[in-house]
Length: 476
Image 1 (tube, helix red, strand yellow):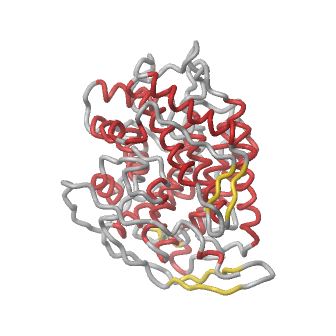
Image 2 (tube, helix red, strand yellow):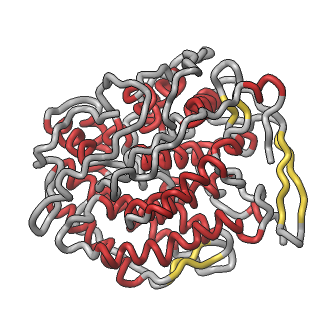
Image 3 (cartoon, rainbow, N blue to C red):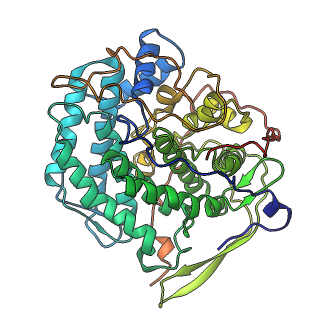
């Protein structure tokens, strides 16, 4: 496996304190994936008050064609992704994004027609979908659309018409098994064959399904893989070298910009879902993810970054094998975008009060963030749920580093036949508290999306992160 060497290795240190138990104190908080009840109330209150930048973020949502009530689902019994199959996976990701966007729009705007639309879409799929098939890309479909489907469903899980049990069964029997199997067997390939984002989407699916289905063992497996997994998606393999200047190399920067951005977005998604259940992975290993995200942000804006040459083995176990060496960070297009930065920047600068100059700059460049359908027609434009300007912009909170509080579940959800929208909830709107090359398959249709117009390019400059007191006891 990849190792840091020399001075860089000395900069890597794992905090020695115990990790809090998964969902300590009982069951999981709901809603509690990417959005908590407090988050939804904050969005609704800010939009109602006409506060920037929430209004601009909400305008992006309401303008998206997927966010319109009455969207008609087109469920399939089998979804295919990959070469050699009758690919129809675009139908699935378009419907999932429509369900998510309608559910989010309901919570912010209060119109029950959007909740009804989201429920109708999700119920249609859980009534029909039985399998995911295709080439190795079926594992990408399971991971990406599994975590996204769970997030859409989490927003309407208390709706009187939502088939909760049936949806849980679909996630547990169709999506999660493929993702679990990939993390164990990697499609019969050597463990480093598949790049970082393959592991990360599988990890996100396993974690989201575990939380949605109240399966503590599944959540524990996902969290353990993040920390100690053998594949390239675990944090020390995704971010193999930490430098003294506060930046840490992102492995897939040696591959290309699009996949590196995908990986950062997926790791941020994983950390956010865990945080909302009281598990701090954002701060794990002395904020290692912060350092990796800062690196990718600086590099994506055209800044120079170091890159330590690494060689990964690839191929099938007992079959074809080879190796590939990346010697430098790939070239970048500073105009390429994915809607990933608002969530990460707001966590570190607002929740935790840390400096993150490059994250702050790139988040400003890409605001207001849209979602699926706003970043091109190909599947790469649907890899993240998006709308981070609306969903993750936070007032600066007075915080101390420590254990996050699991999301409050109010009293188990709204009473009556529908969930209570955040627009009408009484919850506070204040900031949240603390054979060939197998790797040649995959999400290679990433496009370089145009930068948001009117955003002034900000000058670079090397950030020296404030050194944390390494003697301080911080729960990971």
